[in-house]
Image (cartoon, rainbow, N blue to C red; front, side, top):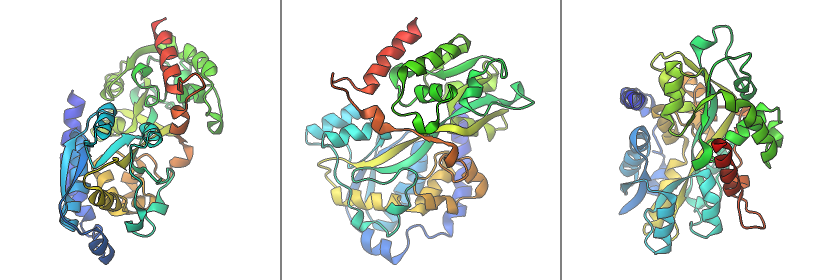
Length: 372
């Protein structure tokens, strides 16, 4: 799609600027890093596609290789099911793999991940992870947010700022778009959004009251033009003026803003989501995998990563290294994080006595609700 192409061009133009901005910081060039992380051989790491993969290479893979002498073998990302199968077969697809936060819990429960060796991390880095902590089996890798997004031209006298505003078609007229949660009830954050729209205190969102959430969704349903499935869709619908308000991932909207497209977003009540680095059980290059995690945990490479793509850094110290204007558009930034709801992946991973989990139950009911 046009938006994706433009976004790649935006990244390319930013690489030189970001590299210059970071150049004087001495990414992990301390005596500590040289002593603890230097090695040989390789480490097999999953690489995301498009702008994400390019940012990973520039901020993490290439600098890690240069610093340590360890070759990063970047392999395209495959689905979590395929990764599980590879681990159970005794041939993990990667040494280091990234997962959506909600996928980590089941992998830990099923003993499919290695415990992270924090003894080789630079002092203070693990402790700086906020608001999502680094755990025994997962190192948060990036933040992104589901936000209320809008077409600025539709609201010259004041734009919607909350999910309640998105639901209020009298005060903020126009069609809506929201995530089609049938394939991913967690990633779309539709139930969190529905409850926030209905006035539930953010501190009381979990456990989710599905009855109340669907009653709230009933109110919005007549005004929904499209249930979107790909991140580019709401951005396109908003920029075209087909809808006036919708849910969207923050990076899609800030990418359009960089092109002077009249769209905006609100951090108020944005749902903060995250991915995590993990080391797969039986990793062939386990020692090098731990060194890779110790490197990417540092604020300097994280700052470079976040200068190349609209994902927030997970080491809070990285925000101090970013230009204030850049930091302000990133999820998890200190000025906005207090207004955001951190998505509770633990709740979504829970299963009841009947063996069905919250994900399965919500998915079944959502599909029925959309169809009727």
